[in-house]
Image (cartoon, rainbow, N blue to C red; front, side):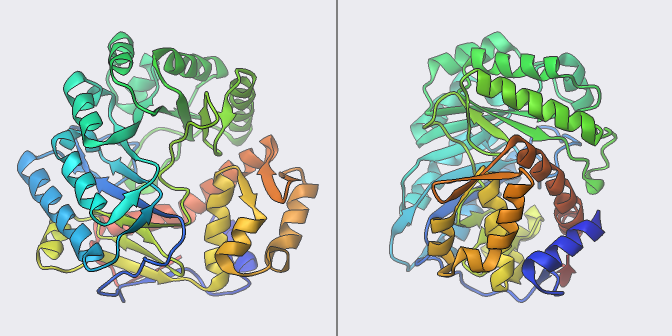
Length: 416
């Protein structure tokens, strides 16, 4: 796997230079001139730890959680104080189970609102156990307009496989009908061992019947550092399952919003990742700037300590070459299911055809992409191979980096 990702990285960046993350971090972050700036907030606390989840998380402790939120508010001030107020596309809360701290989400949104005019509202991830009247009421009053519920599966067999508890579907339906949110997304894992099209179809039908207007179907990825015991589905089975469920959703009138997500209406969306630039707050949160990418420490204790000492909690930073930044841009643009040539050229001030016209023309010939109105769109075949390549990328880069950071709060260097 690492050979494929290394060779493709060298070809696409036209360089032998690896991705090098170092601890040479700046004491401030310049973001005011960046276009399409998004905001992300990481809340790492969970009632219980799911082995399949690779994200930065710790067992919920009320005292630690309060100290963490206090530090988070301070980090926002450290990054933003003294800068002119500007627009941000959106703010998303991930975790962990951020709704565990629903009583303090309003404080965070209010603090961000002193520095940003947030155009598309606020979204937050919820554990199914958080879908209850008190929590939803607090979130609505705090200004949350989009929610994403981590269902994973309604099927008891897969809930057991994933270490999750039974979901009360009637209660879910009742709660979602009582509180209006612009987007109600539900997340599902596909390509679990033995999973059939009928299993996944039933899950998605149940989601829409229960009140979802958006669904995400993420492929199961077995991260090495999670010590998970679930085996992955074979490539051929995975492709058949992905193609069949995609065709089914499109036949039902859904709109494909990204490689993994589908909505019942065109204007419904939920994505914390597809932003040209973004600021991340909280432990393990990442910040993407015009020419650099930063990642905060994964240690909750060290995060609190550093911010209380008025220091940014950055663990590692990479300074992109132009081609490296272009590849990052293209990877996430295609995740959104299309890549607009004019947007690329506006962002980089470079001619797209000169840099990647040949590669995209080849992808057209191979049936991965189609070009319409100066934008490249994924085909079913292209979407599957995006999934497939992302597995290589995940194991070669993300799995290694997150594994190191989960063991070492401040490594000196990581080469990928």
